[in-house]
Length: 273
Image (cartoon, rainbow, N blue to C red; front, side):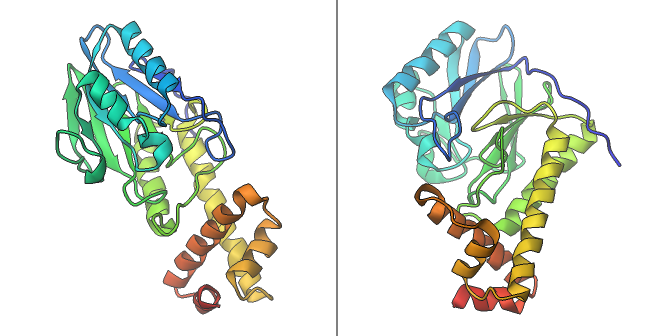
C-alpha cells in the first residue's frame, strides 16, 4: 500500500477567491494565478463569476506578481468559473483557452496531454471529464501541484453535473489523477473551491472510496424496495433541502446510469420508472 506523503505549498501559484460563497461553491470560486518566479508573464486559471470586484481583485494580485497575463485557462464551462472570461480577456488582452470551443477567445481549444510553457512555467493539460464532459485539470510538475477545477474540491466531494457529467468518466479521471499522485507519492491539490489540499493522494483515495460506497448503497436499496429515482433519493440521502434537491436527484441519476452500464437491470428499470 502506498503511504501518501504531504505535499508542499506551491511556489508558482496564488489564489484569489471570489465573493460567491454558497452550498455548492463553498467559500467561493478560486481563480489561480500561475507564474514562474522572476518571470515576466503569468497564466490565469478560471476567471471566476461575473463580478466586478472579483475581476479587480484578480488584477490586483496579477499586479503583485509584477507579471503580464499571457494566457487564461478555463477548467470547465460552469458560470461561476467562466462568468468573468470576457472581462478579463478585455482587461488583459490575453487569449482564453478551454476544452469547449465556446469559451475560447482568440485562440484554439485545449487538448488533453498538451504541454504549455509560459516564460518557463510548465503546465500539463489533463482531460478529467466527469463533473462535466469538458473538465480539465492543470498539472504544475515543478511544484507537484494540480489545479483541479471542480473535479476535486478542497472540502467534501464534487458533484456529477448530470447529464453533462457522468460517473464512469469521473471515476476514470480520479484514477488517472491518482496515478500521477502515486508516481511522486505526493500531490498538492489546488481546487476550484475550498482550501488547497496537501495530502493529495490520500484525498483522491478517499474520494474513490466514497463514490464506491455510494454505489454499494444505491445497489443495496435497489435490491430492496427502491424502484425509482425518488425511492433511491429517499433511501440513500433522506430529505435534501430545496437548495440541494435537484443536485441530489442528478447524483442519483448518474449513479443509476453507471450501475445500469455495468449490467444492473434494477438500475435501468429505476431510471425508466
